[in-house]
Length: 124
Image (cartoon, rainbow, N blue to C red; front, side, top):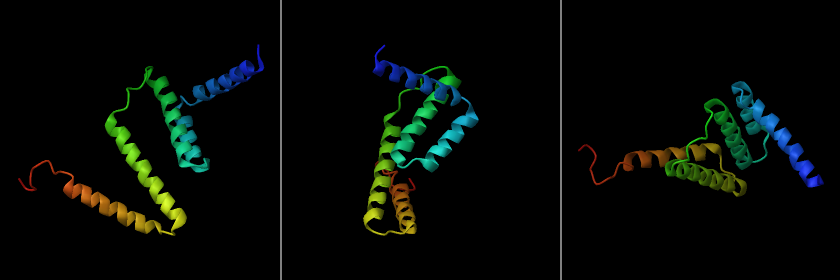
C-alpha cells in the first residue's frame, strides 16, 4: 500500500472514532462549546459545528438531513456578512460594542416596522 493511502486510512480511522464519540449528546455539546472557545476564527468554528451537528443528526435520526431551504441560506449569509463587516470595521476603527448593539436594534426596528409592506397599510 502506498504511503498516501496509509495516511488517508489512518486519518479515516481517527475520523471514524471522532464521529462515533460525537453521537453522544453530552460529548457533542461539549465539543461545540470547546470549538467556539478555542478555535481561532469563527468561520472554522461554524464549519466544525455543522460537521458535529451532521454526525449527531445521522446517528440519532438514522437518515440524512433534508436539504437546506433558501431562507436559511440567505439568513446565514446575511448574518455572516454583517458579522464580517462589523469585525472589519472594528479592526480599523475602534468601535465600542454598544454602538453595534444600537445599530442592530435600529435595523431590527426598521425591519419590524417596514417589513410587513406587501401593499397593505398598517392597521388594515
